[in-house]
Length: 65
Image (cartoon, rainbow, N blue to C red):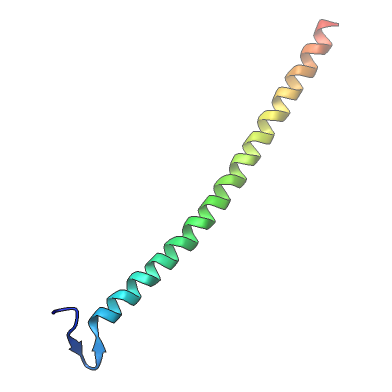
């Protein structure tokens, strides 16, 4: 019955629910943002690796001729 108690006209259960909901919303925004940043970094790394492989292949072709 602690959650149903009223302190100064404010229901404690409602306050706890609103805080939990706010924390979940913040966690969702932070999670989506971090996923986007992670995918961007991964794509940049992949493109750098592709450039290096292409350079190695062209150097190999030039040396074999």
